[in-house]
Image 1 (tube, rainbow, N blue to C red):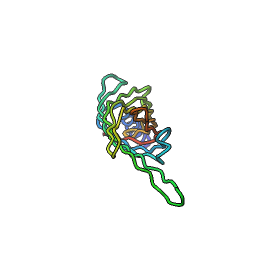
Image 2 (image 1 turned 90 degrees about the horizontal axis):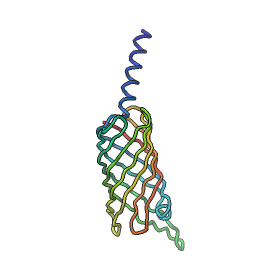
Image 3 (image 1 turned 90 degrees about the vertical axis):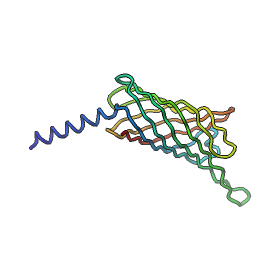
Image 4 (image 1 turned 60 degrees about the vertical axis):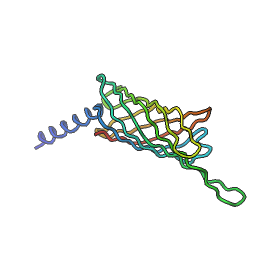
Length: 165
């Protein structure tokens, strides 16, 4: 019985470690702490994205990515009245690349354009360097995301999860 359990465990863990480097559809969710200009007017950030990664080498993937990022406006107390700042939203459209340093650990970046979808938000250049650790079909992601336009930037430090299909 022990041999059967060991074989099942090895097969399961062998499958999940290979799954970390497989291409295909990826769905991610992250929570972020706004910094810089964004930190002055936003309290936190939530975003999600969808990508389709293609294996172009043993440890390198590229693919398209689209997402949604929402910066929630801070509340201010002005002369005894609470005023809520405007929320800022972006739809990033980018190319994504990843390099696997080991079976489970990877680093990469998303580069593209973020469309501003709220009034007065023109969008801008989108960038998101990231580190990830694969746990089978689920990866833990730490990233820095930013949108730069006309000398302004909306940036955040993020933690999230990603599921591969």
